[in-house]
Amino acid sequence: MKQNPIFDGFDRIVRGPLERSDPLSFNRVKRLLDENREENHAPVAFIIQRLCGKSLEEADARGHWKRILDNKLDMETKLGRRVALQTAMVDHFSRDGRQEKPRAKRRSPPARDEWIDRIYAPEYHVEKLREEVQRARRYNHALSAMMIDLDDFSDLNQQYSYSTGDEILALTVKILRKSVRNVDIVSRYSGDVFLVIL
Image (cartoon, rainbow, N blue to C red):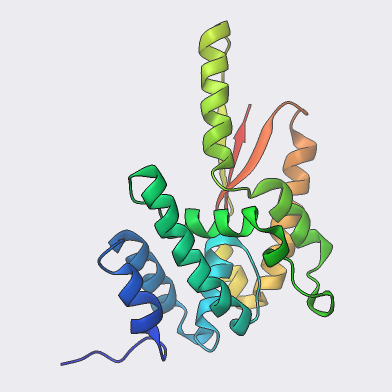
């Protein structure tokens, strides 16, 4: 018995490209969509917003989706290993600033642009953590890191909207940046989790 698709085109857009090649990413996307069926009127925009914080219209999101999947395949070919969908997505938007910026009439609020541009670069936290571990070993210095998780953030997004969630993320980043030294590194680890390298 064939199951009803989560949204029209799910098999072509999500299942086909991801189920066999990257089951972890496929299951994550499927779970996101299953848990948030009310967002399925703009499913691709919802996936992109939840995985990398980019708010797009559905038509724009579907245009980016193919390029994200192509970027994922290209990264996997170059690296010789599987690359998570979220990583390929963040890399796609970070490398091509022209594509990530909406047209002037759809300009995002400055607060959201600020935390995306400064905090959520692809693999930024991994590279910085690697550098700091090497530096700590070389100079025999102490190194600390904090993971900060915003409790019940997904509930807040559902109750008040994703734009409100973005404002809260931007405020969180401002608070974190004011609370640490200039040499400390703040990065967005995932949707509602931040990593601070001290």
